Amino acid sequence: MPRFAANLSMLFTEVDFPERFAMARAAGFEGVEYLFPYAYPKERLGQMLSDNQLTQVLFNLPPGNWDAGERGIACLPDRVEEFQAGVDQAIDYAKALGCRQLNCLAGLKPANVSDDIAWQTLVSNVAWAAGRLADEGITLCLEAINSRVDMPGFVLDTSGKVLALIEEIDADNVRLQYDLYHMQIMEGDLVRSMECLLPWIGHIQFADNPGRHEPGTGEINFSNVFAAIDAMGYDGWVSAEYRPTGATGDSLGWFPGKA
Image (cartoon, rainbow, N blue to C red; front, side, top):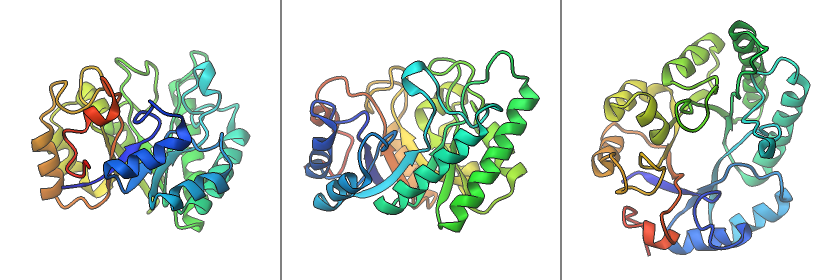
């Protein structure tokens, strides 16, 4: 089976965030991710990882004002300095946590910014970030997020757009973050898509659709998908990023490491 990680922003929310590390380990996970680490001192996060023998597999670059509805600033032409400062902050955390991959949220295109300006800003920012991360041996992932249900206006809403960006930047450390939930909504044909995209995939996340809940609550055949991920030779992490319909422990019937 794939190497599964738990997204602690969505799983084990029955307890406060610091307690979720121990719960993830007790459930059988060896890797964790979460949206953002920046509300906690990196030393404290590092200790929680160490205490529970967990690997930090991914987190996002600073997204701007998340609570105000911002979903990344990489496409915003008036926020370039803020974006670059956020990359430096993320590198500082990644080095402290031993995290070798960071994800860049492209952002929502403002109505007063043209498609071309938003795209060129995104290209310039991602190229700059890729260079900074390459100096530290860190991979930069780019996630396609569905614009039909969750994030209308998100600049990178298909795997094709991410691939176009990767090809334009042409950096060895830029990869696609493939989210099964988002791509089921936007594209479908998940197994064949992943097989075609495998050379560019750096990280995989999943939830069932519709609802973004645990496997078995929607239309995706996860037994087939997980088997296909194994068969195609993908050796990265596969992160559970879903909202449990009840207690997290009760949602883990899909997980072979369940304690």
